[in-house]
Length: 261
Image 1: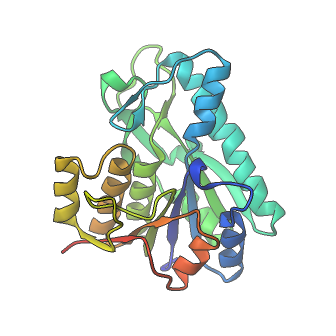
Image 2 (image 1 turned 60 degrees about the vertical axis):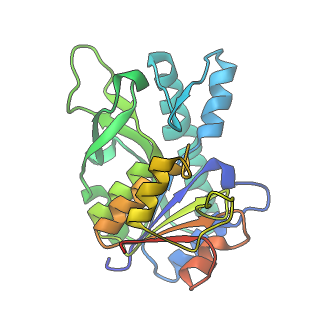
């Protein structure tokens, strides 16, 4: 339990030749305690299109109205979560798929009324994760959260939360050794588009303020900073490379490390 790795995976890194599931199983068989947090934005967008629901993004995050929330919940807590969990089990691992609702794992409040039912994490109840880890399972966490802290009237009981901050909050709550983001880019890029090997907290904050770090990379970097403050090693790597995760745990290079100084 002192060597926990939290892994954030996004749908954009998956493909017919992806090795992430294979790597997760290999690491689990080596007794490495892992927590997997997933996204699935492209799948959600596809299902919203099927339902004739338009998609809008603000600062890299999906605006979630009530019709969207039903689709988001069904796709992320259902389809995507169970596909990943099933894949791990089929490959010979031991995984349990849960959402932030299960065991009241993630409690959130409304982040910004402009965003609709999009949450900001207020509390992580890590008990269910510790129970699963101690029992030898890989928790596979969907970023659907319990909406309880500022809920009023007939508002829904669940809320959509970006998987990136959830990964950072879970890493911090567990005191994880590592937080690894598997992305579809080489790492954090400078203003010339070149990947940077190391970025300090101050440099990352300045790059966000100047717009060099933008869009979907912003919540990833902020999540890394959250985990970093709790003592975790924070890494953003290219998840498209074969066995990127396994190589990372075994000391691979590439990607970006975010450091305090």
